[in-house]
Structure formats: C-alpha cells, structure tokens
Amino acid sequence: MAFQKFPFLISRSKLFQFFAILLISVSLIGVLAEPKKGVHEDVFEYKVKKNDTLSKIAKEFLQDPRNWKELLKYNEIPNPSLIREGTTLLIPGFLRKDTISATGEIIKPNAGPVAVADFQKGQVQFSRDFTPTGLPASWSKLSKDQLLNMDDWVQTGQGSSSKIIFTKNGTVVELREKTLTRIVKTTSESISEYKLNKDGGILELKSGYLEAKVPPKKPGDDTRKFMVVTPTAVVGVRGTELYVNAPDPENTTVGCYKGELEVSAEGKTVAVPAGFGTTVVKGQAPSKPEKLPEKVELE
Image (tube, rainbow, N blue to C red; front, side):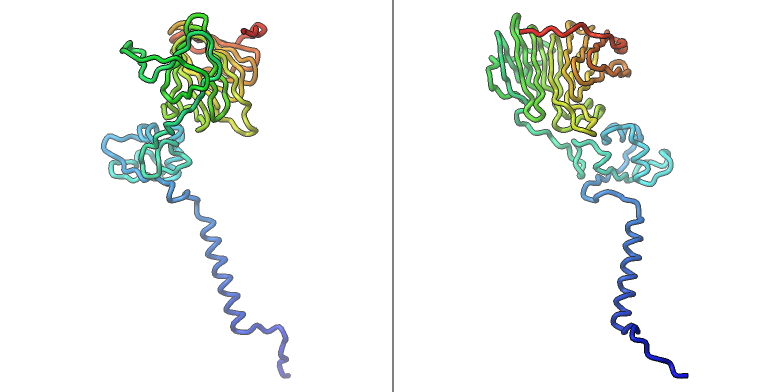
C-alpha cells in the first residue's frame, strides 16, 4: 500500500523556524526564572573593610538599617559571619539611602529655597549663621515672600507670629511668639530612620509653639510628609492639623486636631489620633494620649 502525501507536511524552512522559536522561548523562560537582581546601573559595589560589621554597613548605607537581612538575601549570603574583609557587597537602590548614588557618592540636596514666608506679625527674624552654642550670628527681618533655605533659623519676638509655607508639599506652619525654629536638612539621620519622602519637610523646634497643617496623604502613601523635632521628642506627620509646644528643653506637648501623627521618644512611639494629645518629659517615653479640649482659634 502506497503512502499518501498529506497536504500539511511542513517544509524544511518552516520546520527550522519552529525550532528557532522554541529555542528562544526556552531561553526566555530561563531568564525570567532567574532571581531579579535590580538594575545594574543602580547597584553600588562596596568592598568590606577591616573592622567593618554588618550592623555598621547597614547603618551607613541602608535606608532602613533593619533591612540587613534583605541585603544578605540580595547578595545570596546565608550567614552574616561570612562577611569578611575584602568581601564585595552589592547594595541596590531599593535598599540604599536616597542620599547615596550608585557610585557611592553622597548626593547633596538641592540648595534652593524650600519654604517661603507668608504672613508676619511683629518682630520676626531669620538667620543663616546662627548656632545654639551662643556664637555671634547675624539676624535679618523676615518679610512676606522671603525665601527660606535648609538650615535657616526663624525666631519670633514677644507678641509676634509668623507663617511659613513649604513649597513642595504645601505644609503651612504658624509660629507663635517667642519661638525659635530651624529648617532641617533632609539628609539627616532622622530621614532614613523615619522614611521621609523627598518632598517632606523637617522643623527643629528649639523652643516655643507652632501649629501646622499638612496636606492629606495620598491613598497607599505611608510616608511622613512632615516632621517636628524638639529637644525631647520627634513628631512624625502624614496628613494632619497639629500643634507642638516646647516651652523648655525638658518638656514637649503635642496635640492632633485632625488626621494622624506619631510621637517618638526614648525608643518608644505612640500613635496620636485626631482629638488627642500626648506629653513627653525628658528621659521618658511619650505619655498615653489623652483627649484634647476643644480647639480655640487664635487670631
């Protein structure tokens, strides 16, 4: 019996194309199955030095030092003891501090203005060379529309007040009388510790009283938009209306009118909901939040 010729017989050229596609598909599957190592251009290579420890390296380079396990996992190192002098660690951008580039260089923040003076009442001054140590400093009158940079100090006299607005995220801060505050550089250690985003702002409240209105956070955004640092506490804010009072270096009181905030001191953090406040005494953790009296609007 003779074999019949079937109409669907594949030609040699089509058969070659089929195997070529099959080979490429298998190769792609292998590539996709490999663990994702991050974009090479955003991976910083660090060679471990003498006396280096994993804890020291994590604190120096990681956005959150507690992610040291993720660093080990990324480098496929099963045990911290295997990190010795001469070992090369790959530190990817998604773990690394925002202030460190892929080449290991320190990225300096934009030196441009970060806030603008809006309303001023009475004697309000600013300084760019003041230091709390008491060294001589030059103070100038703070006028409406005056631009403020990182590290600038602002102080209000008796019966005076000031309103400043952070230009990137729209946070409005009102400084009451006898207040001394500074716009903190966003490269400080507290930034990485509290995971502030690049559009956030930080005020160091050396003494006095301030109120702030921070724009509401976007859905799914848990980064703090604003922070106030006093001699005894750190106040982390997302979208909130609040006040912070630091009458002296020993005490801080914080109240949340709207939204949510967190107050940290002595390694303890307390969540403060709307309508509640907390007190921090030097050397102690924040007190249990208590209900605030109704807000009194000040002129």
